[in-house]
Length: 179
Image (cartoon, rainbow, N blue to C red; front, side):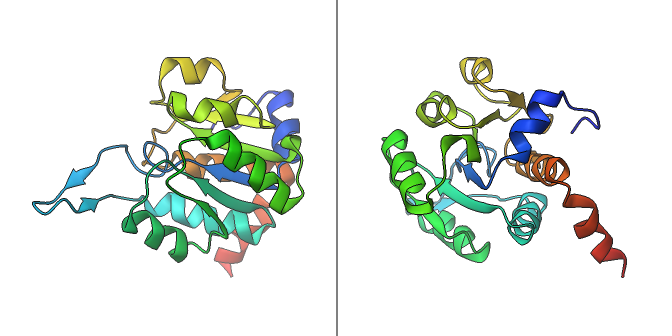
């Protein structure tokens, strides 16, 4: 992440109370590794996972809205303590509306990280729309911020750090590791 971000991004990030993530192409590199019996294997980056944990510790909730429905994602969501998990969703706008109703948050208080056109119905409505570096070009056109890291390789950690830095919580959380 760039150490100096434009004020409009910092201001948007400071207001975020909920980070919403897609899975394939955001928390993973987007590839689906298939076993002989049809089982799906996915790789998740530990930097992203720890960034999510730190963000939750800072007081920002995390949610997942994904079109896929598989056990690898469910296990990872559970490991990370993500409270809001919408899976098998092809109408992400409806899930986003339901999520905002559950949390009582405005669109201005929500950030979304996506990579493909299926993410646009949420991306264009949230307060901080983010595309990963290897997102589809049309998605990048509608993002306010595009990560330097690609999906599945630290892009989510970059966004978590951006949010915590903008909200003034990152330094204190990092200092805890020096004790």
